[in-house]
Picture (cartoon, rainbow, N blue to C red):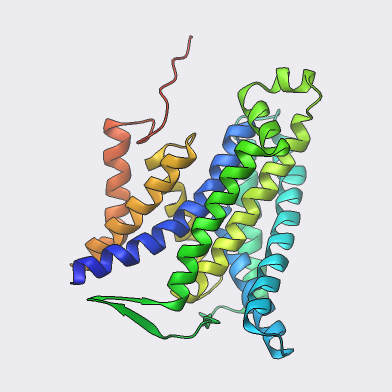
Length: 296
């Protein structure tokens, strides 16, 4: 009974990891860069979402409208932040030093973390779920309304992302830049604009992930460090160039964490990084990643 409950909880948590990890995928395949402050973008999305949700609910809006407005506000704010990150921290250093953009994203994340600490304080802030704490029982398994909401949002976000990347004109432009930026530019696609779009989408996914995980973990200025690292772990496990692999990696990581936590909470984080080591040793490209041969 406890094992089944852990598996269900792990699937919910793993779906959030997968949503955040898709942000790593979008930026990596587009211009071979990533935001190593993705976790702190998640933290900022959670805190902004908490403030926005409290404001709109106190104004008398109903539950559905409040949640929708909160997601729209957070997505817009995080998209602007992602745009600023690419223009101010990634692009200027992309051709100077091979690791310059990595240090730049880390510096931005540290600034965001300290600004959040000054605005929202050092204490952990409870993020009350707008759906309450009622638990539904399916046999021996209990699941809250918020967890059901998270599962539905994860499915919808993954479906929308898949449709955008494979069916929309902008998504095909991103795929073209990822495949061959020089050929894409000859076809009238601006790789720099696609890079901005990729970072905006990545930041939006982090912000929405923060709203979803906030009521599960509560919010604080330091919450993003571990969550961002685990999302990156999910991307590495599944294969950084395969969105389906990232989804599988996130779900697998969430389930393993929850199962190991049945024995001891100390094993929860250790199991995640043990899984990374095993995958990197036997499958360096990830579970569904492609092997690439390089000439030297």
